[in-house]
Length: 248
Ligand code: NAD
Image (cartoon, rainbow, N blue to C red; front, side):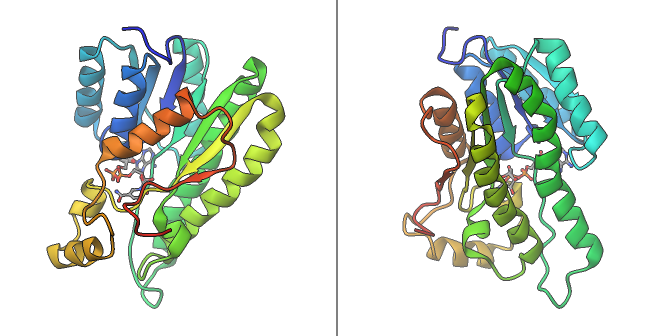
């Protein structure tokens, strides 16, 4: 298997299913050795590992809750111990706890901030010293169209996804001198459990707001992530928005 990412090491958080799984497979398909992080579902993580093996790729599974600073640091250190370095970090792990503001609890606020925003920071701060040492890095933060346009019932989620964009721009400015690029991918609605769990009438309402008339597929997001790694060398601090035209 010869590919543009041969010899590179990628860490993908929350990679046992959905967009993270698709990113792990796509990066492996182009030759990267991949660390598949998961938090709970070992069966799904093993299935992702088997799929990467079928591609002839190298994969390491690491269980870690990225909302825990020490666990996030251990995830990156394990990647370096097992595979020697970290070239690519995809901060993908994310959750939603949707409630309108009048019903949103402090716990639901904290939980979403902890995983989506703090988790990104914890993994990034652990990876950056290794990338600096190598004078190379690609950090890709999976934000969301919700961080760009807002959405009823998603104040906590939208705050994290907008926060990820602010973080991306700042980190891009700070790390450019080390040849580390930092970009945000802001998907619209994608067919994963996060979206297919919504009631059918709500799914139909959302589709009606998408000019291309359908949800995205995880592979369409993974292709953008891979592009940033293989061809996107002059992108940093950018928002790439695969969203079917929902937000322009
Ligand atoms: P998903 O629920 O299928 O996947 C999320 C993954 O993150 C799961 O594997 C989960 O186990 C993992 N995860 C959750 N908390 C974690 C933690 N504390 N530590 C480590 N892993 C953890 O959803 P998805 O749609 O694949 O979402 C992936 C990312 O894409 C998320 O950040 C999500 O916000 C973002 N996103 C999704 C959509 C969409 O429509 N599906 C749209 C825009 C952005």
